[in-house]
Amino acid sequence: MEKTELIQKNVVRGRRSAWRVISSIQQKTHTSDMKLHKVFDLKMKGDYFRYLAEVACGDDRKQTTDNSRGTYQEAFDISKKEMQPTHPIRLGLALNFSVVHYEILNNPELACMLAKTAFDEAIAELDTLNEDSYKAPSSCSWLETT
Image 1: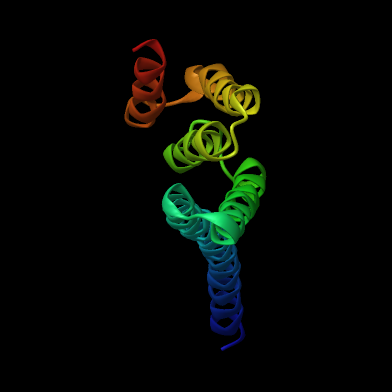
Image 2: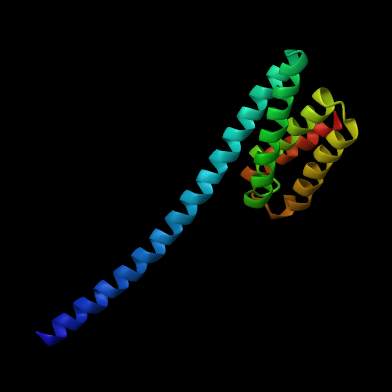
């Protein structure tokens, strides 16, 4: 009986250890997915405010412009911490944020700097990507040349 109990303890211990590793990976993945969704949601909210700012007048324009800039900035800050420079959502966010600076805030220098920095950071990471991941940044580089 003692040998059987020892075998069961070793089997259970190994499975518990494996379960802890799997749970840890799932938790990290879940946290990462939540941050990805947060950035995407903020990007969409920034887009919404940007569209409103394009047609708003007076105080409404100032408020929607501030909302757009603040929402994009929050998303941009999270994306820089949590996403690879080549991630399509991060690249799209940088492009849209630069559009706000160019078209709404009349700041073409900052707009170009934001877009160029995002592009340069993505290009620097291209060597580390697999073929499927390569498509989004390379299509952005195609946009850059047209």
